[in-house]
Length: 259
Image 1 (tube, rainbow, N blue to C red):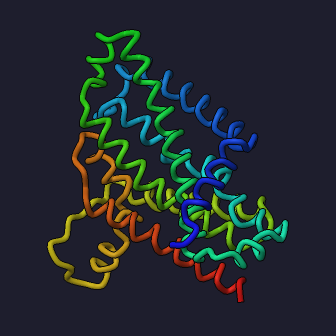
Image 2 (tube, rainbow, N blue to C red):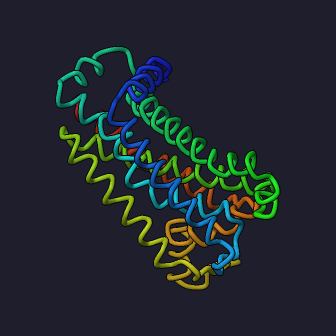
């Protein structure tokens, strides 16, 4: 893992000084905050059965395709366009450490934005404690479950972005590819929402495929568990596997460019 910390610090610093990430984060959080405000105001008239904070989790998840591309599209595409990737690869840096460092920085920034979004219910709790308690904002397990869900899916989302960036020299192409892949991912989750099935052991090929797909088609259904503080370990593990898969593919692509 030679060079990991240097790559991580450099990439994280680049995200913090990039105007594009701040502009994207501002509009993303502003729209999310407006949507959360309207949801809370009309919560009493909805048939939403999950804790109100889960609406914020769903908003962050489905808003990820609009945010993640801005965090990852520069990672390798810009390096390849400027010709600095070849110089970087000539240094004593392990290819996987290079990919892991860039991915870690993107994931940290994504989690930071999620934490800023969590300030919306927190401010409501501080300003109107009685109303916040009636909405369940004092239930710590709801916060913890939502944060773990976002961290797990954020890991795979940013891994998809890093992989997309490794395929091209054009930032816009990398961003659009990331947006497309994440949108398809979330569309599959939304399409299969409400069709949760718990298999003890697969009895046919279709059941085996459903188990292998895991959170790819049952992620939104499992989000209901996280929303009430029940951590579904299989979903977290599946997201880790997906993250490693796309990071490995990105590493293979970078190694191919090296040779």
